[in-house]
Length: 298
Length: 194
Image 1: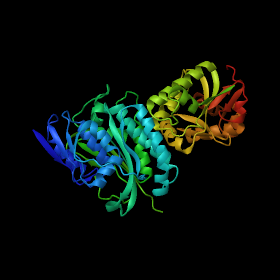
Image 2 (image 1 turned 90 degrees about the vertical axis):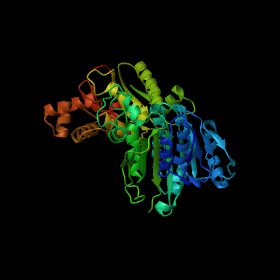
Image 3 (image 1 turned 180 degrees about the horizontal axis):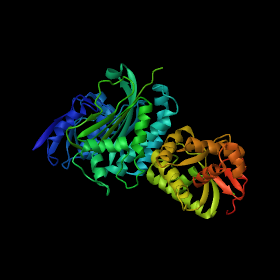
Image 4 (image 1 turned 45 degrees about the horizontal axis):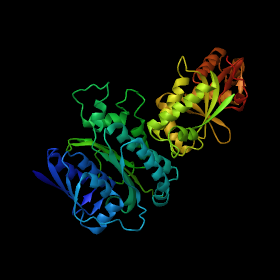
């Protein structure tokens, strides 16, 4: 039996829940067709989550690619199809990337599976982030190093905890609806590995109690810096990312298993996203992380 | 005698010629091992300058490996690996987030030398300890009695405070007195075994 998974026209973090809802209902070894023909827009989260989705299936899925030339071309520019071809049977016409340079793409979809990949990502972002963060988003120059540092930490999370590879992408764009034209830069890192709960459960010191679930695993990691490693001083990484995001009025959200935790922005942008903790979501393995840093207004 | 360790050079030597950023835990662990090998060659008692001037980026994982785990072996324990004092040079604003975070997490402090040569303490340090260290830094080097007088502490309290700072390797103990790590006076002191 084959199940068709319909994607929403906008492949971002929240709408992607519709995809997770559908996929969770299909046994993992059953074939799926992901129908993205009518997608009009995808951000880094949408693209990397699509790859994680294929990675989570034991039967190679089919992807109907977007029909709109500008969308397809942009996905090519983001190197999405290069990675997707390894995981999906692609159906439909894939348009090549348009020739002109796109300053909004800070980092194309990039696979992360080992330490060298993290170095490579940090080197590349260090070269291009200054222009976007300082010139376009009007942030202070000191943000650049911290941005790269945060990127490094979330990528390392895959190498150290996921148990399999994942993907990262970084893009800046105009967040028209929610921010009234305000520009944002978005980092997304997605994998379908063991997830936060699985990682903590692998610790020799782990003791399960009745309350133990994905929500608690996220809270332990992000709020209390708990790590699966016996060294009690491990677990700085995501705490550092959290501090970085808070200091730049950004937003951090992490989905793992059936829960999602969100560190909300201090400002009033994106006020509609109020729930700091969501439980009972459709199950999806691994971790899906999104960091959003908004343009600073004087 | 003081020794200078350029962290950026060790990164290229020990991990990869092409890397310029100190990121990831394995990279930090590899660099720390190189530093430890250098320290093994130096001897039982030494002042070492750890120089971050040419390091572009330092993330939390690397800071934990290179700064915190290095210090933990030489300070804050009753039987440190060796009597080594560290001065950290070239720490810029972007390094500071990661370094301060790991120091606080491990209850550590270090002496950072600024571009103008001035030294300052960063990390987990109480106001009394900071004041005492700054008093000693102004004195350069001093006997306990002189320090007690300058700091306004009773002689017993002054001795205890200096012992605490010495155990944290923020002052050096030498024949006849103490000196604040990172001060000019300190650099000229003999480092013979006490």
